[in-house]
Length: 179
Image (tube, helix red, strand yellow):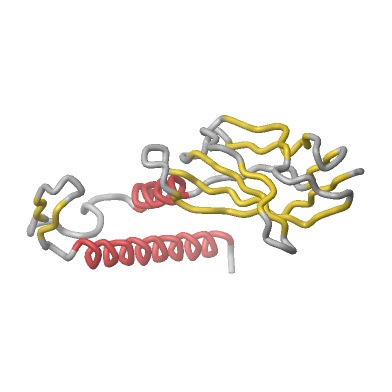
């Protein structure tokens, strides 16, 4: 198969996938909103949905415009996490360099908790970090004995306005207590 046929096939698959995603999102919204039914918003105001509204994309939109919109929606829901894969502490009571970062491109505040894998015990929890903020050194909530511990750092993405949890991501890390 030559290169142009591969590109055309890939483009066609992307367009089909995008249309399927749009159709599924439209179906979910239709079912969630009751399809033309009247609803009350959080302030108690009665909102009725317009019967002449149509689902889907406005006619005349190019495939590139549709794809750009889908990419924007996906991007807004994604977030990046950053933490050292190994956090070293001179002893169980000292600070260790965790290098936790909420990168500026994230759309969410982040809160980080670290738990031991074998017991599930919480050993660290940060306050909220705004996009573009970081915590270089952390202190454990509980002094640990010398040794190497498998742990999980869980990043909770918080909506910037409501501070409700919008999602979570986790990273396996190693906590090393040197003495």
